Image: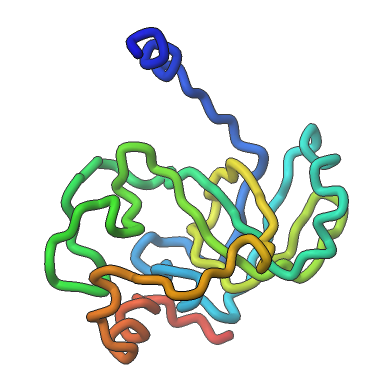
Length: 170
């Protein structure tokens, strides 16, 4: 076990691209893509990774994995945007995580060369992209799911708090 733990010390991730969006301040970023409907952006894939985009244009949605580059402090207990009760960070999607990795499911509108044009973007402009995976309903859609404490948040509160301060005309 100790030998395995030693090998985990040096996990290194390198960005494969940069995410562009109209969201310039952390305070205006919607908390999830569902509250970012219509917000358009793009992803520039670095030249050495462009071949990896092959066959991606057939998918309507993609997962973007990225580095929360503006997250400063790690907190194991946070007050989520949709709730007034402190929660464990692993029961939330807050950016102040031990490993500040974000995940967003966005609409893929088109690809031109090394640029992906996306929609429903809840990601800060200039965010380093770590990986892309296609959304595949056969694998990703689930029935009979539980959403923990989120089930107690009414939809009106979620919509109001989820959109945060982003007011750009879409």
